[in-house]
Image (cartoon, rainbow, N blue to C red; front, top):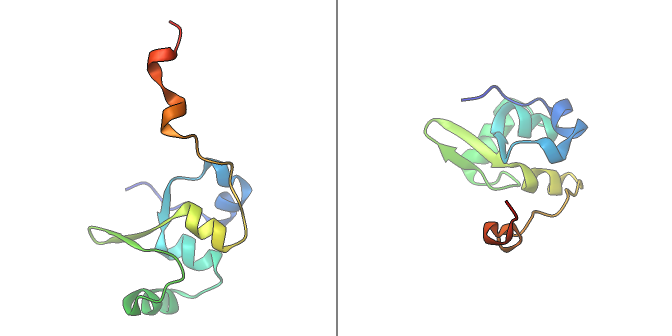
Length: 89
């Protein structure tokens, strides 16, 4: 797995952030929570954004985390707008 993105990296250029970030430390620290609280909230199903389990790792969708923090990203490009049949070669 790639190394964790730091909160400062995430906030410096949110549009360049990966689609998911680690529950801890990235998401937890962005919300001002300590490690114990982060995992306790997750265990109860009370973490404020969706948590995705990938094997033994926990990730949160970056867009959801940033939205919770009040940071809006550029809109995603719809798949239909990326129609490769209309591209000139």
